[in-house]
Image 1: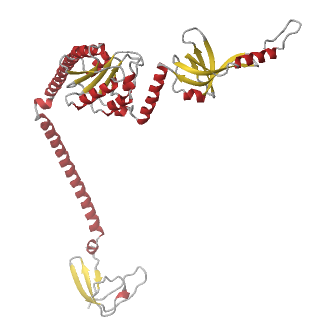
Image 2 (image 1 turned 135 degrees about the vertical axis):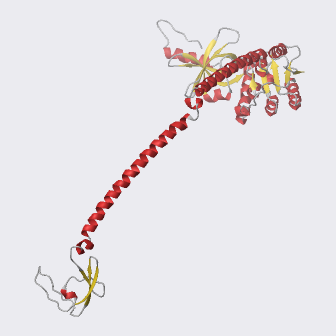
Image 3 (image 1 turned 180 degrees about the vertical axis):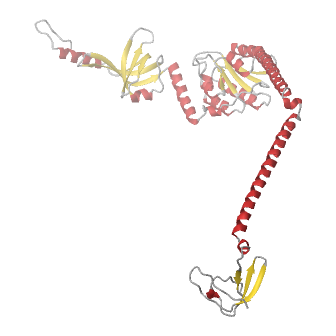
Length: 415
């Protein structure tokens, strides 16, 4: 019912707000088609979307929960979606708000969501692991090219390969490069080239296109067949911004077919220039090395020992002679010194020895046991003694023994 009012009988604002809220919420849940032009993920449980009509400049702000956003799969700005919205009015502010209870990508957005889902599954299996990537040969014996007949991709690869390496051997297999049966044809070509021992690298090339056009190159069966191939595979699909799943599983991703040609064969002219420069550097290095060694030999030749190898022996002979002279003189001085020391020691021994005392008229008395007699108490009357004098010995018998006071000599009479 419409509210009646006049200046004399105004309607309370709360009643107007409640009426507006009731009118708006009578719309209930409604499905709309739109395009995401802004996505704001918050740290909490409520996130914000800005949806725009697909043909008119009409946009609204939408709130949705984390559960709804995650259930929609990978969504991004620019994606077309179908959303279940419920409009409402907040009484405190009077603000019109839209809450989203379901969000589903449609058209290209739905395809992108499916591709992203498959990508996550394959990544979890490890098919994108860099450790699985095989290195391309430096100069392939044969190049297997899978492409569309008379396509720009074929021309780009063939022309640039022959420009870079004219002797390159290309084996071309024409396949459908879009459509439902495209993935199966490409799988057969990959299997044939992988079984050919003369093919060292396989190139899958196609020009750019829409998501639908490039959808076969995200086919799960094709991706798994490329991952299982023993021959290195190069993916050259679309333009640089296009990234089908084949790019992630291939051993090398080329941004364009032309880039693929540059990556699989070297540039013959560049290689020749590199060889020429290397030969020049090598020649310069050899000449420098020879010059350095020649200068070193010349310095060695100028050394006195090389001019006269025996000159050092003459010097050593002089040094040996001088050492021998010093050694002889030192030995002679040492012998003379020791002889003088021995003479002095001998004279001292002679002066202090008993023989010297005997020459002054003294005698040494020795009993029958060979003991020297130094006291009258050591002999008895009638004992036989031997007296040693300076020039011989005397035999005697003790007839009398008298002990004198200190300092007096003992008298003995010969028999």
